Length: 162
Image 1 (tube, helix red, strand yellow):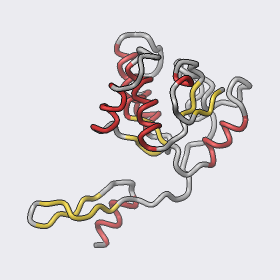
Image 2 (spheres, one colour):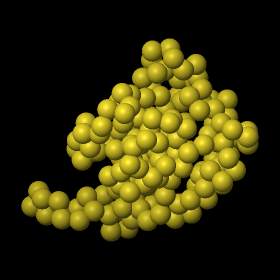
Image 3 (cartoon, helix red, strand yellow):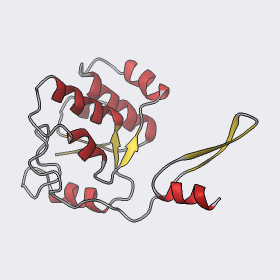
C-alpha cells in the first residue's frame, strides 16, 4: 500500500482491479498548488503570451485565480493544439512547449467519450474543433472557461472573459 501511496503522491492515478475488473481508483487529492510561478512561461507562448505574465491584458483577478486555485485544469486538447500548431510552424516557440505547459502544475483534463459527443453536438457557433472541445469539456465538467474568444462566450457555458 505504501508504494501505491508514493505513486499517488507523485500525481499518478491508480486503478485497483479484482479478477481483471476495475473496482477502485486511488487519485491524488487536490493539495497545495505547486506551480512554477507567474511568468514561468513568459516568452514561451505565442498563442496567449499574457496568460501567466504581469501584463495588463490579462486582468489581475484571472492571474490571481490561476495562481491560487487548487483545481485549475488544462485540457489535453490544449496541449494537442499547441503541439499541432508547432508542427505546422504556426507557433514559434521551444520544441518542448507542450511539456512546459503540462508541467506548470495545473491538473490535466483528459478528453473522453462524453466530451467528444458533446463537442460534436454543439450548435455551429464556432468551427474550430479545439475551441468546441474546450466548451464541451467546461459544460460537461461544470468548469469555468477562461477565454477571450467571443464565439466561445456565445455558448451556454460558464465563462471568465478577458
